[in-house]
Length: 341
Image (cartoon, rainbow, N blue to C red; front, side):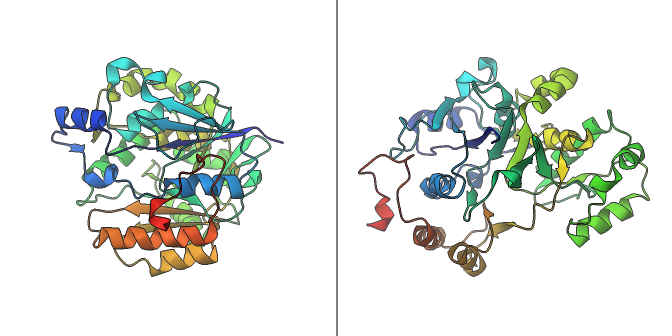
């Protein structure tokens, strides 16, 4: 039995202390402080219910918060470890509103297992998953795919971030040499055909053009963080001063791609049991996926164009209640979901 932890980050956007600091440190030019970065959908209890029901093998859940925790959370649950930012992020970089800063320090969480899976709070288990979905023989299961960085005028910061990561990785890895060293991890027969073809096309280019990473739960080795921090301490420390997501940031995808390029992973089509939804108002497919449990894991990404927000939230909560009606051990007794009453 492998010892695997989950790490999840969460924010109470109504926390008075957080709101005071958020007002004090307003985002500047080249920084991303959009409301959807912090908006809570009232679904977090279903994240915990999904973990308890569909991944009972998890050793520990480390919940990372800036201040308050949900009022329904059972902080006495033996599988739960509540971690505040000041416990693992250097105090000179606090308060921070930058998820990238929080994520590059995850390896400093006290008691974190060598094998851990990092979740955003919009990534949910909706069907049973085995340990082997995330790790086999002590190695993360992942997909190694190359893809050009896209100049996206609607989200310019992200374009910078992907390129920043690629520039760091290109210091340590020669693209064509790496493809020769581990060809079957680039051309794994189980990969989605699209990304298998992307990797074939990328043979034409001598330098890295960018990386494709599935926007879902990320399996990590804690030692990967330590190794890359030793190499890039200066760059990672400098970006830690960016209180909001900034075009000069590096991201946790840097660690994930470094892990793959070093060969410390097993090739797998992790897309097969995962579905990403960008919620913009039409949620019929999302609701069917939840109710019929068509996938093992989903991501529900918030977007600024979302219309009828409360109506959409309520319909998604109702779908989750259908498959996860019972409270988990992570919830306090007597603290039912008020929207279910």
